[in-house]
Image 1 (cartoon, one colour):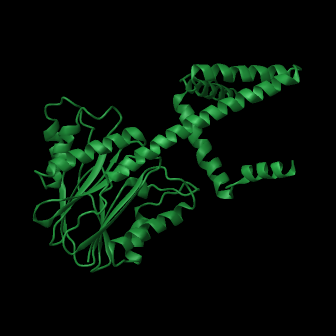
Image 2 (spheres, one colour):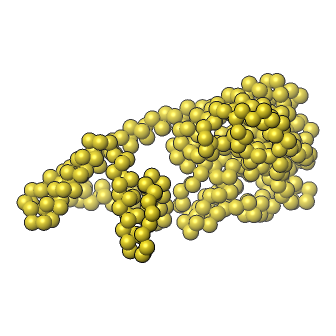
Image 3 (cartoon, helix red, strand yellow):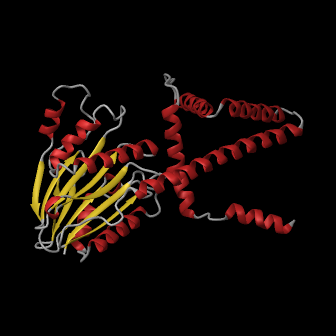
Length: 365
């Protein structure tokens, strides 16, 4: 009996840390509240703080019940009834039956979650296989890239497409939202761009073509932010972006960091069927051209990096990243990437990612 109790205690305490409790209180509970709050029915709130809190609690409880399958909802209701009957001087056996029912429901929900998790692991493996394993780079340059998802699969992706004259198109895109829908859209975008790049090597024209292709395909409330940088062998960089954070250019000659953010609206915001849609898109997209010198670096990043938060809710932000690039110049793209990721990890202090994080570094050696 003593051995069994020790095993049970070890099982319950396995992997527990202060950081995990802090994450549970500061992130998981507010996240669950936001999820059910979005699903709850909209009702007029009564006057008075206590009554208002009680009504919100009630409607969140109803939203929770609606997420259960009909059979599980009935079993959950039966467990509550048995518990109430026991509480009001009913037989002790009622509390046991309520306990069994609740644990049965918990076991079924965990099993569903594990099955879904296994499917998401396979989906993530497929998504990773679509990323370039050995990204192309122009002569005299080296590249390093990294992508991390907030969930099992995500809406970020990067690519490196070799085009004529030894130039390479570096692409970093982010579909709004997370999970499987966003991952499916990224696969569509990647396939389309690789096909278009066989005919077009200008970033602006590629985005115009992509917008025309996706118009009407993206579901309502979904849109795409993307940045394309064409890097030529002589160090010329042509950048075009559509609603994306853009790029940062570290100049070794004066140890400064210059943002590259030409004008550009996100893809998917133009109403399908608008006869002047292509003209409108073309007028909103601009290109910016810079020339990288030796030991310069170009950093493409997703907003998930800049918006990475710590336990206190503070954001990493571009000023901190720019300061890092200026204070600790690196000699290779891989070293640049590792320093950026290490600094973001240190800043987060164990906090979960709120959004997918992707970074691509092109270094002119």
